[in-house]
Length: 78
Image 1 (cartoon, helix red, strand yellow):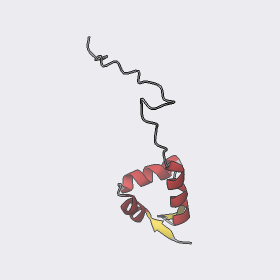
Image 2 (cartoon, rainbow, N blue to C red; image 1 turned 90 degrees about the vertical axis):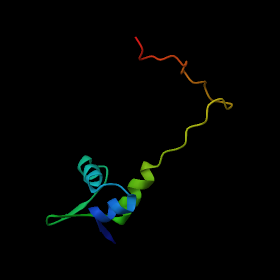
Image 3 (cartoon, one colour; image 1 turned 45 degrees about the vertical axis):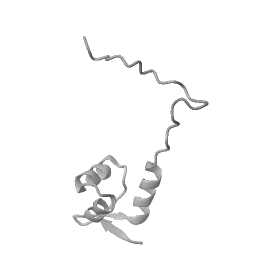
Image 4 (tube, rainbow, N blue to C red; image 1 turned 120 degrees about the vertical axis):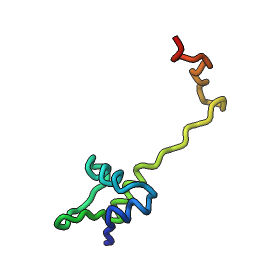
């Protein structure tokens, strides 16, 4: 099994290491502690990515979709 550092994971995903630490802290991305070092198993990273995938929403005005509730009015204007 291969383990990655936080920096390696951040570089692979093109995000900050701060974001990776945040995902670990929230429990979204499992890790192991080796002394003071933090390591992420490649398998756990792949599982996280697989479960984070979003499905595309259907485009509006296609059969089976509801029209948008947007009316074009500025709801923030007083």
